[in-house]
Image 1 (spheres, one colour):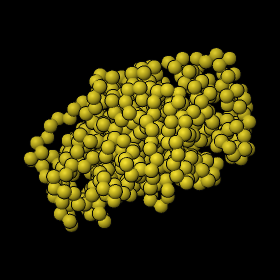
Image 2 (tube, rainbow, N blue to C red):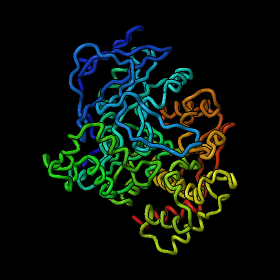
Image 3 (tube, rainbow, N blue to C red):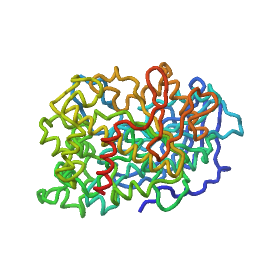
Image 4 (cartoon, rainbow, N blue to C red):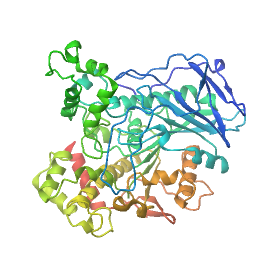
Length: 535
């Protein structure tokens, strides 16, 4: 079993050096020398390889690169899955011109002027995208680093790539037998180990590393904290989760049919013709390693994705749900967001649900297969079909994209974000410092999606909004001090506690306030009751 927090091997720092020339900043790593660039008051190193990995192989250190390597442009994106959504929603799925399986790169953003003996705290960011799409360039952290310089609490930001969809998150018994589930998580761990080995060369402090992410990046961050074997953390000390709880994680043996369909689409199935590639390989995994990239991407595109199905690529667990939730986490400090937001985007996968019976069947088959008819009836009461009681909440009968859309949106929002976040926060706060927060800002921009899943992240990366400035300052405080508060912040942010009277901070369009963590309490508590009962 993979140890998430094994200490990296020591590197003799006297053999390596960083040049901080105003015109050509360079850094010498063990496997190559890289030239970055200065932009304003920042020095940037983009597209630095941190690992190499063959298809469906573990990451390992890159081969030695000879000569000066340019680190002035982002590296290629990992192979993406094509996803689409109904028209009329206020976002577009990003596309990338440069796609490669050789995609395990990271980017470093640091103040251009640092005292020679200074060692700055470090924030590692993991992008979201449903474990199917995304790139390290998606979330520009330069405004946050610039803000950290302005308020006298500078830090270094690192953004990382990791493998996606089938390339990083295979499910099924064959992948389990080969030990190659959750390769994307292994990529993230390898990147954090790279930070431990190398960040001092950028004047970063490996003892003051925090990690965070949004959506799939937040889910990844939560799972990176799970380590039952020890009670200390060599890779990071703080975790910043945005709309990314350890939610309904399927078992690695679930959804075998998706893997089987991948084999059929690539001619790697044992039922294929004798001339198939499978006949020349001992296992289906070996066959998948040999098919052309375009063929495999085409097969991935034909598989379910997070906008059209509840069964798709992503994290897989080996044990039971009870073990995941109760054998919680190392003693890292948490700042967790998402209590009031609902991922209405995920309800788009269920626009074909039009009747009460279909709603109950959807809940039963996808989330609670062990529930009784009386428990399903109680869920139907808590999530009525009346669109005025659905999500986006408080919008009457508007935004009802299909007969049961707002009902499904209310359920999926509570099931995938609100209930696991509350469960996770309450249990984690019994052991360590936790601050909870939510965002109600930007509702108008979301249209049918309301203040939709992920809308806060874009606002936090700009300084043109109240939310952006307030959020950045709290992030800077957290990265520097493992506490979002400092004497200059106008509203004290209370720690979460494990009681039912805990509070969280609400970020709205006009500022921040403190609210009780009791949002949709009855429905959320019932979901968590069923979650534990199912385990």
